[in-house]
Each structure stands twice: as C-alpha cells, then as structure tokens.
Image (cartoon, chains in turn brown, purple):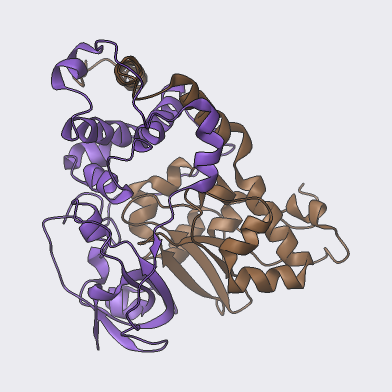
Length: 207
Length: 218
C-alpha cells in the first residue's frame, strides 16, 4: 500500500491515506461497528466547537476573577467544568500559572497528550519528533524557534505529560490591560501561550 | 518498551517550524481518521493504554516518518485485527459483508455526551501514599518489553515529589489486558543538571508524572 514512485511528491501520500482510511471506514460501517454520522459529529466537534477559544475563556476569567483563579489552582478539573468544558482528554486537569520567576511549558515526549477540552486537538508541531525530543532538553532553544526570548532570571519548567493529567498554562496577564473585561482579554490569549511556547499578546495593537 | 515513541532528549530532528494559522485538519482523511479511531474506541474492547502501545509498536521508519494520523490508523488496524473485529481479508479487499449494528456502536446522537464524559482514569485506592511532598525519589531504571510510561531520559534519575495525586489506572498493566491495577500517582521534578549534565540549559527543571511502583526512595 505504501510503495512510492520516485517521481511522486508528498501529495501522493495523502491520496494513499484517503483510500486507506475510506476502506477502513467502509469495512467498519458495513459490519455495524461504526456509524459514519458519528464520525461526522466527532469531526464537527473538533473542527467547530472545541478549540483554544475554550482555554482562552478560562485564562481570561482567571485573570479577572480571583476566586475562580483560586479554584483553578486547587481543582482545575472542577473549575474548568464550571465553565462547561469537560470530557475527553480533559478528565484530569492541572493549571500552571506563569509568574515573573517561572515560565511553564508542556510537552508529551511519549505520545501526544494534550488538553483537548480547552485547546482542541493538537497542532502538528506539538506531535512532531522535533518538539517532543527537544522540549525537555533545551526548552529555551525551543522557545527561540517560536520567537520567544525569556528574561534570564525567569526559570523554565517543562511538564512532560506522562500520565492522564492534562496541563493548561495560564500565561501572565499583559501589561496595560487594567480594567479590561474577560471577553476583551480572551482575544490576547493564544493557543501557544497556553502550551507555554508563546506568551499572551501585547495590549498594544500589532503593527 | 524502548520504541520509537520515547523521544525525550533525542537529537537530529531539526527545527520545530510551527505553521501559521494551521488548520485543524490538513486533509479530509485526517478528520475521518480521528473520528473512526474515537468511534472504534467507543466499542470498549481496548484501553487508551493498549491503543498507545499499538502505536509505539509500529516500525521505527513508519512511526518517525509518517504523520500522526497515519500512525493512528495503522495502530487502529492492528487493534481491530487483534480483537477480531475485522479480518486481514477484509482489510486487504477494503470491504466486508454487511452485519447488524454492534450493541456498543457509537451512534451520532450519543457523540456529544460520550465526548463530554470522556474516559476518567482515576480510581479509588485505599493504600496510604508511600511518598510525601518533598521526598527525594529515584525513577527506576527499567527496560520492559511491554508498555510503560517511564520516559527513557529520566530512568535512574533522582528528583523530588512536588505533588501527590490519587489512584490512577496503571498503564503497564492496562495496556496488556492486566486490568486497571490502580496505583497512586506523583508528580516528580528533576533538575536539568540531573537529566542532561553540563549540557543542561541553566535553571531548567522538568517534571514527569510517575506511578508509585516507578519510584524508589533516594
């Protein structure tokens, strides 16, 4: 199934995989094991409903609601459930609060564990051998690949998701956002800032 | 197992190259692969640990040279074959005789509730924790043939307990049909120097989550 003609570019893999996945889904559907409409619903969930906007809402609320932030520190799963985000790959949540002293960064060196309920399905780079191999050994060099340079005095702590705990980084609130409400703040919270490979956006408009 | 998945600390994979405005799926088949994998998992025949092990058992060139959804599909094929849901003949022909709906088939109307429920892996245990916050521990130096969540780069290394959690399904058991065998979970923090020696970036710390039987007092 995976014989390659030398003159084929990478696009031929996609065609092979289209055929391979379609064949498997056909077999499973005919045998009554899988409902294709359920597959459609799963795709729709992660394409359109569950993504990093969930996490951004959690972060923005943590920035504006001290009681919620405290709940998030003590029982992240319950605090996040309170906002309606529960379920698959978010069953056991932990929140990591960045500070001037410590920057947190999350990886799964052994597979691709990721907090789906708040961030959706992971980007390709998060699952890549490059990120998984380097994040634990040279996190500052990894951050440089993302254009991030931390102050020398800010320590980096890398969390390798080796069990079923799923980590959400709470980035530092950007300066100059005093008085902003949670909705306005949420627009500054990027996916990467919640993985720890980025920072929240600046309050200043980007040039 | 010392498989292709155990990537922490490896060198030679180059720069990370994050994609700007990355789509959720890069091709239609990736979405189908995700959906079929989750729907088949809902049949309940294997644990998340067994599915992870099926992926890490793929040949190194496949694991390291293909996209993650291709890894998922290849592993799913092996799980379906192993558990007798499909035959090699069906897989090769790409079709099968029609059959009645499986009693555990995930129907479209139950997707939202199934995803919102997820698959919690915490389990009640009665044993008192063997370790406490701040205890010095050493991750065991083990090289099992089967599944484990001990990452190679931290084997034999000394760290300290920074969080004591409850009981969780033990992957080393669950991946091989051995049942949940729940054990207490700990978060253990390592200094960069302990893991990487003089090449460590200054001030770096790394944590892993480790089951009680992975740890010895140090």
